[in-house]
Length: 371
Image 1 (tube, helix red, strand yellow):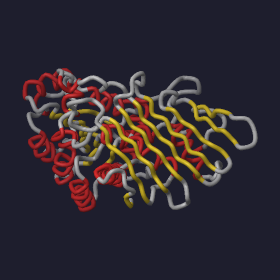
Image 2: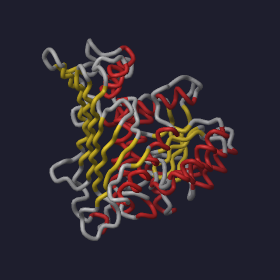
Image 3: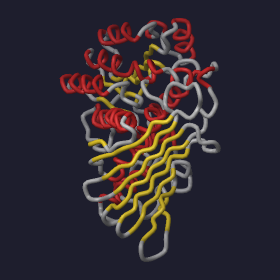
Image 4: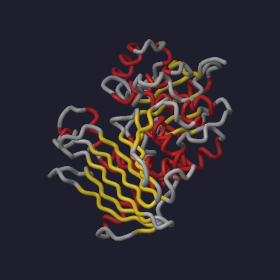
């Protein structure tokens, strides 16, 4: 086998997430970046391509040109990575899929549920792979938690609590030259505020680990900072068919919290707890017996999880490796293999449905809304 030929749209100069995706794609040596349309600015696109050692004739001024020209080359890209602002995810994905190119896309899926549903039809018609980079669901201890819950080790689920707290938007950074904040503060480009940026991560993590989605939910989208257009804090409550209850809190205006994603699932026999800032451990709190921790690549990891650990126990893995696992499994799936835990269009649709359902509830004063 040869490395998969990878292209990238977005991710040029000043892009944090572009660098993350490039590192992730190379970590397991399954991809080779050979082409890109790295910016809507031709000058920035050119400089970015040069800095990444991309051949001049494969550094494109537009993603439309890139899709057409790469599809016509015998050595054209096999998969494209989309790391643009949210409003471009669906239009770009559609064009590349229609040109026979697999897609790896940053989250959230887009800006509306309707456009996400249209993309789902394109994916289905193409027969190609579409992968959404919900990286936290690829962390080993998150998958350890999922495996233990699926094996009924904590008993019947009674409560699900997830929170994702940041403080980087506690100031009006969208009014500065901060590239990450400027487009996230623009409704036309972001579509949603905190609920789209980090709320969908929290939502997907809770559903992925528990294996459950609610019957009904309610919540509020709040804008704490005066003058800001989009939401910067989100509260949600969930009711599940088995009687379980859930709570979700996502905030980008919580002083003192850098990137604190936490999940707690309470069962009838034990509680399981994970914190992203301590990704090497999973806490187990049994009803009878002492609480204990499970460590990544430790002796008591599930076999389904141990194979994805890249370093020996005690050699920390974290954020970048979560993205790398997405890319590793994407390579497997693109080559025709099986990767059942890889997030795709279903996760994307659920994320967009979460955003729109929460908006409906918030607009109705926090009323319960059917999922």
